[in-house]
Length: 89
Image 1 (cartoon, rainbow, N blue to C red):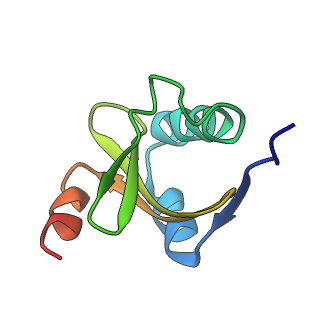
Image 2 (cartoon, rainbow, N blue to C red):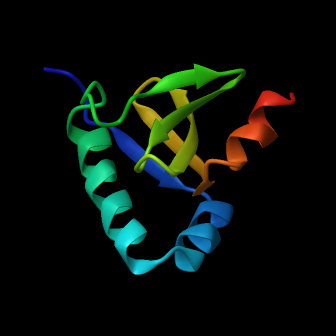
């Protein structure tokens, strides 16, 4: 049996989450359940961007994270513009 996935939320992610509209917070919670139970779920659309990984909250919002084995450290969440921050590395 595979080890359970551990989600670690950074302070930045917690702050950004609080700034999100309520419907996006709800979508994010749903995506976290998928991430923890089935990281290959198609709605996550997980892919690598430089040294980080990204998953879709919805068409406009993304979450970036680091993966170390079964530990996923969620770095930040925001509108699609945060992708530019990670592309420039």
